[in-house]
Structure formats: C-alpha cells, structure tokens
Amino acid sequence: MTQANISLYYKNVTAEVLGPEHGINRDQFSEIAAKTTAAIEKVNQVRAAGKTPYRDLPYKAAYAASAKKLAAEIAGACENFVVLGIGGSALGNIALQTALNPYLYNTDDKQRKGPRLFVLDNVDPAQLGSFLDWIGDKLDRTWFNVISKSGRTAETAAQYLILQQMLQERLGPAGFREHVIATTDPKKGTMRQITDKYGFRSLVVPDGVGGRFSVLSPVGLLSAAVCGIDIDELLAGAADMNQRVKNTGFFANPAAILAGVNHHFYQRGKRISVMMPYAYGLKDLSDWYRQLWAESLGKAKNIHGEMVFVGPTPVKALGATDQHSQVQLYREGPNDKIFTFLQVQEFARDLTIGPAPDCAPELGYLAGAKMSKLINCEKLATEYALVKDLRPCMTILFERVDARTVGQFLYLYEVATSIAGRLFEIDAYDQPAVELGKDATMALMGHPDYAAMVAKIQPIATMDPAYRI
Ligand code: PA5
Image 1 (cartoon, rainbow, N blue to C red):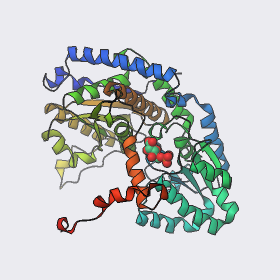
Image 2: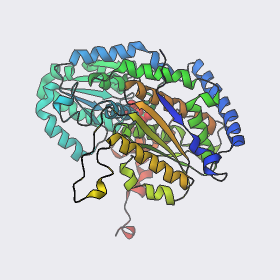
Image 3: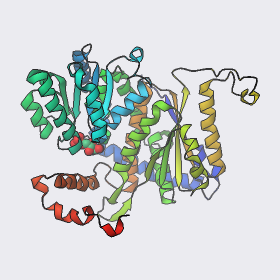
Image 4: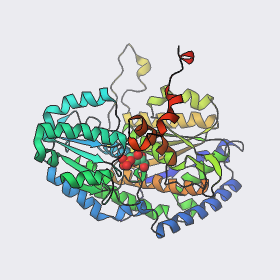
C-alpha cells in the first residue's frame, strides 16, 4: 500500500513570513505553479515515451532479485565488500550505507548485519595504499564490486587494475574470478569486455540510466543488499513517491514545489541551495544530492542551443555540526541562498542527557532531556534565526529514517531534478563538461588516442616560476 512518510514544509519561503523582498507572494506562487505544471506534464510525457528509464526502476523486481541472489551467494564467506566506482557509481552506495546502517557498522562486529563496506571513490595513492595494507591478508574473505558503466573511467580502471594484479598474484586465476563482481553495461564497453574475458559474475547498469540516477538500479542495490539493507522497502518507498511526483497538481506534488521554488529563487539571485540534514545518517544523502543537482542542472547551453550558463550551486552542510562553522555566513553573508533542512521526527534510538554536576548548574537545562529533542530544537533554532534574517527555508520531514523513507527521498529528488531541468530548459541527463577533464587525464597519462591534446594542456601544466612563490 502506498505510504507518505516524508513531507515537505515550505511556508518559510513565503512573503507572509519573509516579506515581499525575499519571500514568494500568492501571485508569484500562482505563476510558479503554472510554469511548473507545464514542466511536470512534459516530464511525464518524456517518461511515457521511455526516455527516462530511471523512473521505472522502483518496479524492476528483476534487478532487486539479481542483487539479492548475488548477496546470498557470498553471504557468510564475505567479511569485507569493497566498491570500486566514482560519481554516480559510488555516491548512492555511500548514502544508503550511512543512512541505513549504524554509525559504527564497520568497526563494531555486533552492529553489523553483513560484511564491512568500503567504497573507494578516489585515486589518492596514500589512501588506497593504507587500505591495501589492511585488506592484503583478507582477500579470500573480501569481494570487490567494480561499478562502471563504461569501464573507461580512469579512477575506477586504475583501482581495478591494482586489485586485479593483487588478486591474481595472491588468489590465483580461480580466486580472482570468484572475488570480482562487475556492475556494468550488459552488452558493450571496456568493463563488459573484461567481465566476459574473465567470467566474473555481473549485474547490469540499465540502458539509458545515467550514473547519478542509478542508485535504485543494481549500481546501488547490490552493496545495500549485501550489507543487510531491505532493498524491497527501498524500492517500495520510491514507488510510493512516484504516486506523488507524477501528480500534475502543483500543490500536491512535492518534487514540483522543490523544483519550482528553487528555480524561482534562482531567478531572484538566490543561486545557492544549501541542504542541511539534522541527522548524521542523512549527511551523505546531501552529498548524493550535490552531484545530482550540480551535474544535472549546471549547463552552458539550453535545449534551444543558446548559451545560458545556468545552474544553482548545491552545498551540503550538517546540523548541528555546521552551526559552528557555516551559520555565521548563512545569516549575515549575502542573502543568495535557499535552505532545505532534513529533519527526523523519530530517531532509531534516543539518549537521555545525564544530570548536571553541582558546580555547573548552568547546564541544568540540558539534564534529563532527550538528545533527539536537542537536535530538533537546534534545527528549529537555526531555521528561526535564518528566517529572522529573511533567508528562505524549507524542510523535508522524515517520520523516521528507514529504507522506505530513504527510497521516498531519493525518488523525490530525482524527479525534482527532472522538473527543474525543464524549468531551466536544459538537458538534465548529460554532463558534457565532465568529458574534457576525463579526456585531458587520459592525454596526460599517455593514452595514444588523446596525444594531440597534450600540447594544448602544456601552457596550463607548465608552472611559470614568475608566479610561483
Ligand atoms: O553521473 C554520472 O554519469 C557520472 O558521475 C558517472 O557515474 C561517473 O563518471 C562514473 O562513470 P562510469 O560508470 O562510466 O565509470
């Protein structure tokens, strides 16, 4: 049965609260509603034409079944599960793990429902070297999930090649084959060729689903299933949200309101969008959102081929931690931001604050209070302070943090991004600007196909001593 366990509260963006200069009045809301309704209709049409296959992932039971089957095959023997991937092939995995497993999952065996999880999404040799030193004598109890649609991504490929050599040397050909699982294109690409050559078990990155929209595909589902996350509930949550975000009634559609309000404020000079969860477990959902929003909406050209250079800048912050780092700027710096808080009504567990010692009666106000009350009061206090300085704020309220609500959240933001893409009139699904840097890396690393680029990079690469102190 469809559930609605997260809600959007947006009164604190209205002119009623913020006044006419910084708030949205009724007429402006009507305009936003009209524009955004057209955008929802367009997004629904594109979906019906099969051009946004990420929209159907909540209903792809076969993907969940393949992830669960593989997870069951390695359960028991697997003590460490290592994801090699970057960007859309890593951030969803990290977000699910932080949100849905305990803080000390990897450290405390009693808190683990599955193997330890590591997501290696960088090529820092000091970092990877430290990890390899630790994992080196545990390879027979470790499985590696290489996630790459193309297989040509330099970071993932480099990690894979290091691990391939290590596994071949230490476990032999059969062990190497056994301990690698590929998540890649079903038919083409470098990782598919490697998978077929060595006979790895594999899962698919579905056709037409871009990395940043792939968390509900095998890309995100396998590590989640391996680590004991209820992926059926995750998908059920996404399906719940689908019912809400396909609604063409603007005021009944939370994705539409998120997209419409953000787009509106962008036009009024509020071009920075801060997501601030007040729950540690939700912090990597803002990292996931940061990629989704930035790569999808930051575009030079619009769909008419005009140069527009648009895109809101997503920023992640964490409550209450960043109250002591960022809020000074947020309140007194330029009024160029919109804030979206993530708030949890019922935490998975709660703690009672102990009594204050006689020497510190000034701490008595905390004594006996619940920690959940403190963090939610801090959220409210920050919102109050921001609103007092006429900064627009919205809140996504989670009844609780579980696979169902996280699935609802992921799908909400994916569709909000599609609708925002329509409002900005850009292609939300490509990332042309990322390619040049990828090509230049290959050129600098000596890839023969990119040799001609090296000369073009040279003026940037050569450090002019006149400018180096
Ligand atoms: O969102 C995206 O498309 C990117 O972040 C990709 O996921 C990332 O570049 C990795 O690409 P690949 O899966 O081909 O290795």
